[in-house]
Length: 192
Image 1 (cartoon, one colour):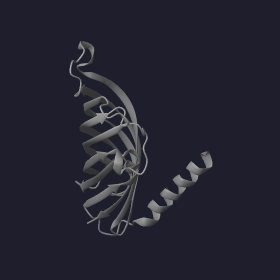
Image 2 (cartoon, rainbow, N blue to C red):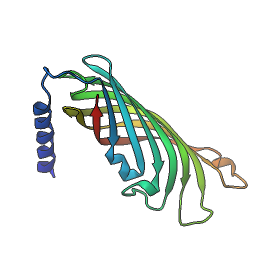
Image 3 (cartoon, rainbow, N blue to C red):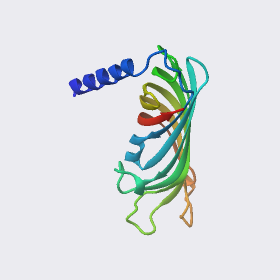
Image 4 (tube, rainbow, N blue to C red):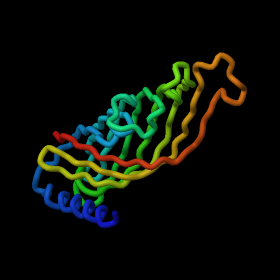
């Protein structure tokens, strides 16, 4: 496993070195599709705009539905909703949007959640999730196409409100918690 991670890191670094020279005109806009989010039932696109040589901002929009995913982390649960994900990025060694970067992100998500999709009248909740975190990543560009990968994590406040209970017990009106969640991304994009 350790050797595989080292090989992947060397491969991505080599792509980054070979992909872009400073003499090529930098495109200022990128539209990306985030493939790894399909694993958790999200179709997510992101738009990134370069502000100057080191900074860029991005906005991700996603639709959540377990049925459209290629895999399910929680196969007995059902989720439908949307997500908005703003980011700010700082690129270290090369002109934005190419190279190693770090950034801050925010997340706002809202939708419906059903605990057991096998039950006809299972517990249905409306959920609200908001939070933010820190990422470290690398973006590589080949003429007009980009590969963006990052890892990170953040703190989220998630709140569930029961919808289909006729009598809501006093202790379950607002079920919520503050959690830490890691994040990982692999996306392909087109720059213009």
